[in-house]
Every structure is written in structure tokens, then in C-alpha cells.
Amino acid sequence: MASLRVVLLGPPGAGKGTQAKLLREQFEACQVSTGDILRKAVADQSPLGKEASAFIKRGDLVPDSVIVKLVAERLNEKDCAPGFILDGFPRTIPQAQSLEEILQKMGLGLQAVLLVQVPHTVIVERLAGRRTCKNCGALYHLNFNPSTKESICDRCGGELQQRDDDREETISARLKVYDNQTAPLVDYYRQRGILREIDGVGNVEDIRHRLIKTLEDRAT
Ligand code: AP5
Image (cartoon, rainbow, N blue to C red; front, side, top):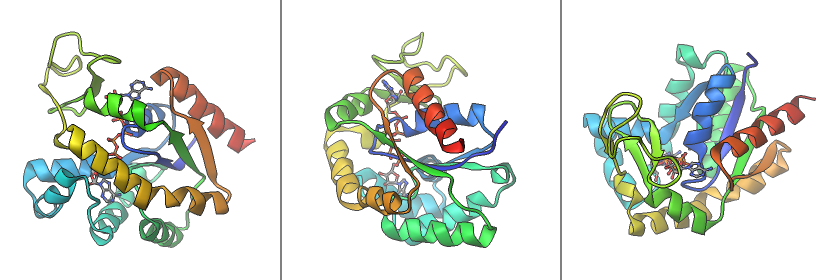
């Protein structure tokens, strides 16, 4: 298996988490989802969770200093030694600059930043129908990828739930935050010559193939 050191960039609901899990099966890399780490911390009521909870509920970004520390620690864990797929980080220019510093210290560089592009209308439909297993984190969608038994995870039998921040008013707040604070990263990485743009509309398998093809083209 080839190793991978990439960022998955894209708006909420673009399918970053879905595709990160699939790439992880095909490449030697850990998945670093800052959203998943924060939600677990909130559920565990840890100090990090208590600090992050209000930001997530409002659809705002958690402060850069908190996130950067969390990612630096995660990247030093054993399963990230062969490679990593960053899903939901970086989300601001200062986070991207910190990532460069972290990787420099580790003697590593990013291979590519994969921008998954999806229009806002598709995003709202994807987020409103998303359901997540409370127990194992598996992702479902009420229309596009429903579980066999309503509200029950096919994989582990856990209960499926809707994320607090997938309510309509929070979705629009998250989209504004993306446009204002995260979209500037597109130019940031384009200028560095590592941005690759992928059409994120279509079924999950088609998009997986587009991502793999983009990664293969990069290697040649
Ligand atoms: P986070 O969890 O990172 O949320 P996000 O970036 O808004 O992304 P999502 O998880 O909503 O979407 P996704 O692109 O992963 O899509 P998914 O694959 O699930 O962050 C949550 C919050 O944490 C933030 O708002 C912030 O407060 C905080 N945070 C996190 N990182 C931070 C950072 N770096 N700095 C500061 N704060 C941070 O797919 C969505 C749905 O669509 C699913 O139901 C899926 O089944 C379905 N689907 C996926 N692909 C397809 C397809 N091709 N066709 C049909 N359905 C599809």
C-alpha cells in the first residue's frame, strides 16, 4: 500500500469524512478528523469538550490554538507514522501556517490538498439527511445511504443520531464560516502548487474513483 499525506478540503457536507474513511482502506494513512475528535471530547465532557461545545453548537470555529495543539498531538501518534488524511483541518490561514511548521519539524511535506467541490444546494440536502452511529461513528444518509433498519447501525447495532449542528439554522452559519474563513485556503494552496480540484457531485463510488485518479496522476 502506498502512503499518503493529504488534506481533504471542502465545505460542510462535501463528503470529506465519507471519502477519508474510504481512502484509509486503500492507502497507508490515519484519518485525522478534527470534527470527530471534538465531538468525542464533547460527549466525554472532557476539558477540551467543555471548551469546544458552544463553538460547535453555533457553527463557529473552535480557536486555532486549541485545534493546532490537538492536531500536532494526533499526528505524532503511532498510526499516523506511515501517512495521514487530514479531514476538517486546516480551516483557516493561521491553521495552514501552523500545519506547515508542524510538518517541517517532522521532516514531512504535504503531497496534495484535495478540494472537494459541491454546490450549497446539494450540501443542505446531504447535511439535513445525515445520520451517524452513536457507537461506531458510521455515516448514513436518510435517502442516499439509509440503514437497513430505521435508526439502527448496520455495522454494530448502535443507535443512529442527527448531529446537533446539522439543523437548518446552524447549517447556514457553517456555510458562512466556510466562505469567510476556510475558502481563502483554496488560493493559499493553489499558489503553492499542490491544490487538486475534484467534482464532489455524484455517487460516493464515483467520487472515490475521481480522488484516486487525481492521486495517481499526481504520482506520475
Ligand atoms: P466537522 O465535523 O469537520 O464538519 P464539516 O467540515 O462541517 O464537515 P462535515 O462533517 O459536516 O461534512 P463532510 O464533508 O465530512 O461530509 P460527510 O462525509 O459527513 O466540524 C464540525 C465542527 O467542529 C465545526 O463546525 C467547528 O465548530 C469544529 N471544528 C472542526 N474542525 C475544526 C477546525 N479545524 N478548526 C476550528 N473548528 C473546527 O457527508 C455528509 C452526508 O452526505 C452524510 O450523510 C453522507 O452519507 C452523505 N454523502 C457523502 N457523500 C455523498 C455523495 N457523494 N452522495 C450522496 N450523499 C453523500
